[in-house]
Image (cartoon, rainbow, N blue to C red):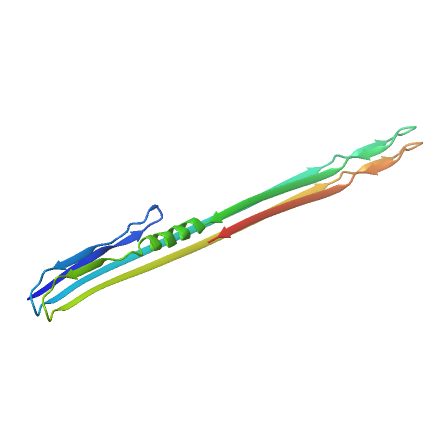
Length: 196
C-alpha cells in the first residue's frame, strides 16, 4: 500500500504597491496505513520578492542679468557742479534641496521575506509495521532590490554690469567727476541626498 501527499504553495511576488506580505503555508497528514506501506508528505514554499526603484531628478537654474548706469555730464558752465554716475550691481542666489529615500521599500522587501519564511508541515501516524514514512518540507525565499538613481544638475549664470561715464568739461570752474562701481554676485547651492 502506498500513499503520497503533496502540498505546494504558490510563489508570491511583491511590487512597490504591495504593503503586506502573504504567508504561504500548507500542511498534510497521513493516518492509519497498512504494513509495508510507503508514506510521504512533501511540501514546498517558494517566495519571491522583487522591488525596483527608478529615480530621476533633474534640476536646472538659468540666470541672465544686465545692469547699466547712465552717463553724468557737466559742461559749458561758468561754475559746474559734480558729475556722479551711480552703481551697477547684479545679485543672484539659488538654493535647491532634493532628497530621494528608497529605504522603506528595501525594508518592506526584507519584512515580506521574513513573513514568508514559514514553511509547510505534515504528519504521518498510525502506520503499519515495516512502513517507510517520510515528511519533507522546503522553503525558498528570494529577495531582489534594484535601485536606479539618475541625478542631473545644470546651472547657467550670465551677468553683465556696466557703470556709465561721469564727465566734467568746458566749465570755467568744474566740479568733481565720480563713476560708480560695477559688480556681479552669484551664489548657487544644490544639496542632494540619496538613501537606498
